[in-house]
Length: 296
Image 1 (cartoon, rainbow, N blue to C red):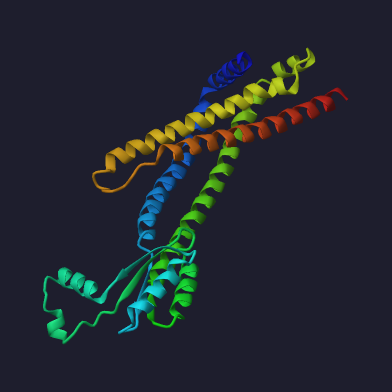
Image 2: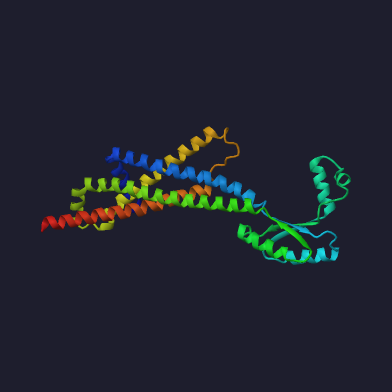
């Protein structure tokens, strides 16, 4: 614990000694992470809306007119046994007509049309993992092949559009995260390389008196992690301030949940440590080779 506190203090001192470069690095990193957080906020709200739409995915199974109750019950047992079916509800043609009349505010539909045109219907909710367009199409085809089933409707176009939209969101998140990681490594690389070069002579003396490579690397790696955490904190503050300022105009928008933010900071910290280690390792190796060449 003392060693960690020492390295954190040394890393912080390194940043303060080169304050201008440190502030520039934090600003650049914060801008990159703000864009990433903004995309995560948009994605979170899209996924929340998509989850509500997912709950509306389902199949309407229209039965043949005049189907005997025994056959209706037999079909119910068959369809309930499908692993792709989470729940099934039977709506009689009389109940369906009553719902339509209630929606339209009239009770004369049967009188006007000379009868009830609506069929008996099974409303099927698909099981989790079976609600994508391909799975619904397979399920609709299988159910539609049963005797006594007149038609199966599941809103193919909007289901495919929803699935495609979610794929685009996932790809955009992956691309942005990849670009953010690259930007973090580049900014950290330039900043830490400068910090190492500024202490080249001191590092050489420490190496002569027996300091290990791990001991030499640790303060700079810690400095890189501190830069990333400061930038992540600044980006989060800016995003939350913007969210508070605009939430009256963006009704229904939800801020990022705590577990998303925890994963964000953990990810930034990991990338910061890994990027710092790579940069410092390469720079110290370069200095060691240059020192060996100079002595030769």
